[in-house]
Amino acid sequence: MVAATPLSLDPATFLFCMAFFCYVMAAISLSTATTLGGNTLGLKEWATTMLVAGAAFSLFFLRGHAPDFLTVLVANTFIFFAPASAWAAYAKFFNIAAPRRLILALCYSGTVALCAIYFFHLPHRLIVFSVSVQVATLTALLIASIWPHVSWKTSSATWMSLAGLGALAIALCLRAWTVLFENAASVALLAKSPTQFGFFFAAALCILATSVGFILMAHEKQRTEILEASKRDGLTGLYTKTAFFDIAATLEEEEPYAVVMVDIDFFKGINDSFGHAAGDLAIGFCRIKHVDHSIEVDFCV
Image (cartoon, rainbow, N blue to C red):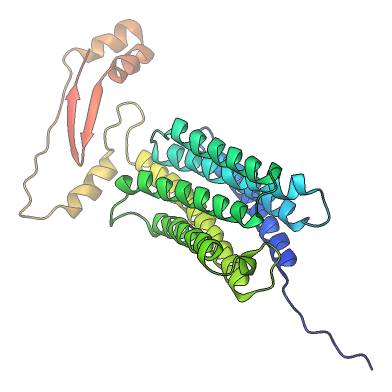
């Protein structure tokens, strides 16, 4: 009778699973983006991030079975450009300008350093150190750019995504420290060491938290926009009667407020002379500014 072989998780299998997970997240992001219409809230860019990361993990998985040029140079180059794509996703979601020159400068400088290490046959641990530092720097800068746009009232999905990014940056810094001052062999790509498995698990959890958090962020923002649109008149942007009473019910008795009724003289003449389409167009020329629940109206009719 043959004894059953105990299950074991080797680094190559872990890399394959991480690649597969990234491809699944990319598919979910793309399918979600198609349901949002024109404004994809950065989901297409996030799908690109996951595809790039998945391609890198796939090439890492082939280490020893494919040319080193692919599994070392190309794979680590993909790792450089994954956070750059993540920058584009978060910038589009938060409607902020990403520092493209800085991002490209970091990516290209990292790629040049990687090529120099590879082609001059320098110690392989320098590649691990360089990639870890560069990606950690890009991730930290990404968090710094997002931070001014979040508050304590920000959704839990946003905090989940930021926590994933922060944990990933810390894990990469620890990996760079291990390579430089501790046992570099323990964090080699296919090393079966507790340190390497710990980093793999941390990276997987960070990618999971960041990806799920970003997709949930998009869902919540879409739901909020749909809910807000349902409360406003499509022509003027003013609150509907139902929304008005909902807001009025939340006002405190001590809180000062005012109710304003606006009437446009001789507006009926526009409808009678030029048709209701012209009347709608005239109303559409109103410039309406919303400040919390207050509204400033400047009519141009």
